[in-house]
Length: 337
Ligand SMILES: C[S@@+](CC[C@H](N)C(=O)[O-])C[C@H]1O[C@@H](n2cnc3c(N)ncnc32)[C@H](O)[C@@H]1O
Image (cartoon, rainbow, N blue to C red; front, side):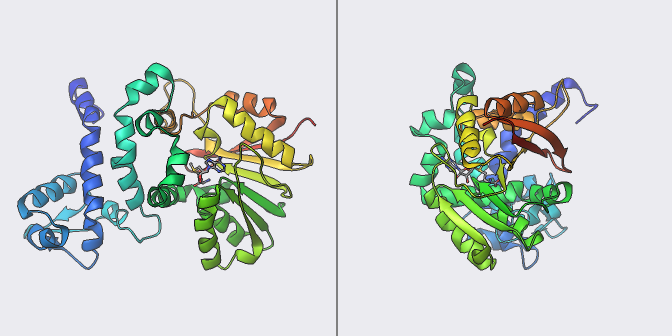
């Protein structure tokens, strides 16, 4: 697109939802899973997906034009590297995120104007309750969300482990640890480390099974609760990945102060987030920032904003460790009683 006339560039950006919805329908129909055993024509896929062959062909052809599926000379479609990520059961699968982005999130983004006018979550306006309460009341969507987090943020875990040395941490608490995939990866890399997984009660129940399946139950305590009330004491470091960005400053301060209260004084605070870059520098964090406004009602922050927030909660930022992905480990230590 770069180098083409401005009208073409803008028109391309304006059509963003075409791609979202085409990918969403491909995910709903589980087309990538159906192609796992080899290429198939739309005629063969239509009965298995409850669709009509010709419109299904048109969907596949459009997706093949952006390298999701490939069409051969006999009009059969096969998987491409992008389509592989749409399979539901592969490591790093984006299937759950495709369903979430094209469904629940898409509906909320349709109300972006409301968020820009009020600064409030469009999701909450649409559903009448905050997103994490919605997920507690709709367990299937909650499960989808947990899996989508692992899919979309999964690669960040390996990048974080490459960039940041956790070796001096005896017990690590993952606050808002979701389905436990981040803590599992850290405990697997550091066999002497103990873990505490903390999240809402319904979420940790789902995580418990994952930890058992990974053989880590004896090294990891699972605690259900609400980080606006308290977080468990007894860890040497408190990790929060993609937690603070879900909330406005007031709520973020409550979470950080509750971490501070759980600490004696020598512990580390590890906030793992994308740091918004200054000026016009391209960064996905600037669009994640809009997503945070529309969905939970939170925000992405600059380095300075993280520094000020941490200081207000009784921490001093010690360093920001970048990773190969868009996230950084923002490390802090206790600065005041
Ligand atoms: C954006 S997800 C991040 C999950 C995980 N840390 C990751 O990086 O994949 C936010 C997490 O915060 C949890 N959460 C939301 N409100 C909470 C609360 N009041 N108390 C504890 N956890 C909460 C959610 O259940 C969810 O797992």
